[in-house]
Each structure stands twice: as structure tokens, then as C-alpha cells.
Image 1 (tube, rainbow, N blue to C red):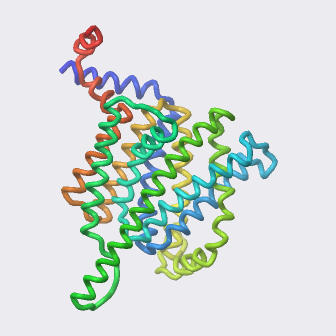
Image 2: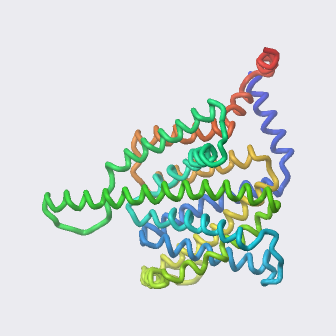
Image 3: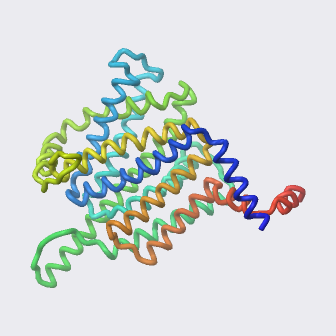
Length: 356
């Protein structure tokens, strides 16, 4: 009974200490980021190739907002050199486009979310390789669990790959089509892996950049979304094609307006993405890193559950096992699990362990 009182007391103290701004940021992370995943899934279900267009609109929206606020309509001076931003932009644009483009290769939303949860594994690998870092054994155990979880989910998903099509092919032709679907799926897995490691390399570069020039997250957010806009010029035909497809989808009423369904999903995706990013940035300035990590981890789990239940995505026992390994591994790596265990231990036991 004492441990229950201890947990309630600890949680109550944390809530009391938390200011309104932090509580609002946590709420907005769940509202903005979870709804953003929902609208992205609606977008790619309507048009699997629309990931590139969704990424472009996201970059354009944040760049315009940043130009008016951080950039002060082009009059604000930069705190970080332009050449350094070019390198950062290369990493950021590559990982962002690759992540959304993977939907074009038979990658389901649950697998996409689980795969991206492997960012800790990629960060550790890059840290060991580039920075020559060494980690305690528990960290390696956590990364092994995450890797195993992703591998299980990937293998499980590989047996369920099927691209949407209308065909009356015979058995031999059907087998050929299944093999082609599987090859496309493998390409999607390769793209997700590429994005994972590029993102990890970007994190290391960003860390060194901030150590030299100071932390300027809002400025970095603005320039990493403004500068890559030119990269979409060669894909203008692709963007226009998907815009046309979006405008030709069935219409629906929203707030008294009649709009094409895909256009509405894209607009809501862009708006919630802006809300999600802003909320996470505010959260990092108002809360401890443990709170930030816990919030982001729980948000991913809630998004995953919603995707499975609402969109009826296939999720077998193997998927659940892999997901469990990924999230437990993440909690061990970020020391969340250790913190929770400490909360549930009676205070006398904790004191005894300290003495030992």
C-alpha cells in the first residue's frame, strides 16, 4: 500500500510543479502529433504516391511561417553560417523525403512507425562509428531489443505484402505479381533504413553545430525548411500530377465549405504537422529531457494503437511482440523503465540499495 501512496504523491508533485505552458505543450504534442499521423495515413491511403507532395507542403508551410516570425521578412541575421546550414539541410531533406516516399513501396503505417522507432539504434551505431563512443551494457541490451523488435515486425510484414490492384490474372501471373510486390516492399525497407541512418548522422552533425555556434532551434527549423524548397523544382511534374489527383477526389463538406477529400486531408496534415513540431520545441524548453522522452514515446504508442484499431491495419501476434520489444528497449535506453521501477519501490528498499 505504501508504494501506491508513493506513486500518487510523486505524480501529484510533478503535476503541481509543471507550469501551464508545459502542460499545454504536452497536450498539444498528443493532439497535434497523433492527429498528424492520422491525416498522413488518410493521405497515403487516398494516393500512395502523395508522400512527396505532403512533404513539400509541410516544408512550404513551415518556411512561410518562419519567414514571417524568425526571419522577420528576410531582415534577421543568421546565428549559424550559411555553409553549415547547407550540410544540415542536405541531411534533413534527404531523411524527410525518404521517410514519406517509402509509402509508395507497399509500406504500411504501423511498420513505418515501428521502423522509425529504431532511431536510437541508428544513433548509437553512428556514435560508436563516428564519435568512437562507448556505452554501458544495459544500453547495448536495449538496442538489441529494439533491433530484434524491428526485425520481427519486418519479417512478419513481409509475408503480408500486397499492392492494391484490380486483376484477374491466373495463378502463375499472380505469383509473379506477388514477387514484384515483395521486391517493391524491399525497396521501401531500404529507403526507411537509409532515412534512419541519415537522420542519425544529422543528429551528430547538429550536436557539433550547436556546440560551436550555440543553440538556435527555431532558426534551424526555419532554414532547414526554407532552403530545401529548391530541391523540389526537378519534381514539379510529379507534384502537379498529385495535386491534380487530389483535386479530382470526391468532395466533402468541412466547416460549411465543399472541398475535395484529398485536399482537405493534405491541408489538415500540414496544419497538424506545424502544431506537432511547435509543441515539441516548446516542450523541450519547458520540461526535463525525461518528460520529453516519455511524452514522445507514449505519443508514438498511442498513434500506433489508433492506426491499428481505426484503420484496421493487419497486426498479428508477431507484430505485437516486435512492438513490445521496441518500446521496452526504448524505455530501457532512455532510462524511463529504471525511473518507473524506482517509483514503485518502497522508499526503504531504495535507501538499502543506496547503502549497499
